[in-house]
Every structure is written in structure tokens, then in C-alpha cells.
Length: 64
Image (tube, rainbow, N blue to C red; front, side, top):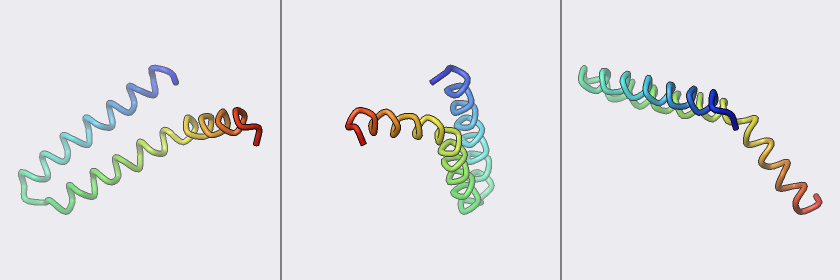
């Protein structure tokens, strides 16, 4: 895992937090929820390659 991936995840987290706060203060809690779910999905998409390599290492350890 390289540092650029960690910085990207932190950036997405900060952006989502700011947008959620703005939306909640304007009374749009539903939209804030959608933004937070979208943030989780974006981070999950960023982590797919890392998860794939982890599962590959686990398979190699057990000889599957």
C-alpha cells in the first residue's frame, strides 16, 4: 500500500465530511446520508486492488 492511496482516502473523507455538515445545516439530512454512502462506495472502489492482493496472499498461504 503506497502513501498516495492513503492520501486519496483521507481526501475523500474530508470532502464527504464537509459536504455532509453543509447539507445537515441546511436541513437536507437525506442528501447527507446519500453523500456519506457515496463516499464509502468511492473508498471501497479505491481499495479493490488492495483487497484483491490480500485475498491472493491468503489463497497462496493456504495453497488454494
